[in-house]
Image (cartoon, rainbow, N blue to C red):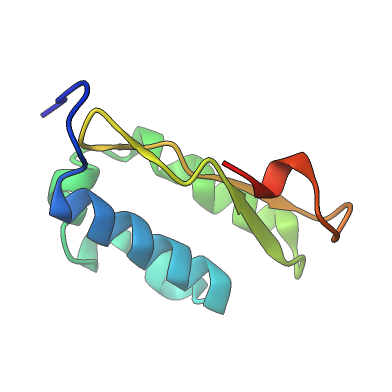
Length: 96
């Protein structure tokens, strides 16, 4: 489903935004049960690229997430990154 140079699929944007919102809310049970999220079967047909997020959330404790590189590559690959802890002001990590 890669489309280099094309805009993102609507389902890819929806899944990415849903995960971002759940991370911001700290809704870890919903993130653990990600296969119940809309478009999970298309966005992550196998878990190996999703599961590292759960390890990161567990290690972050109560730190506030900050997001960077909020883009979708080739129509379906979210490049979103999350940083926890450290500097809370403006930094290079908060910009695309």
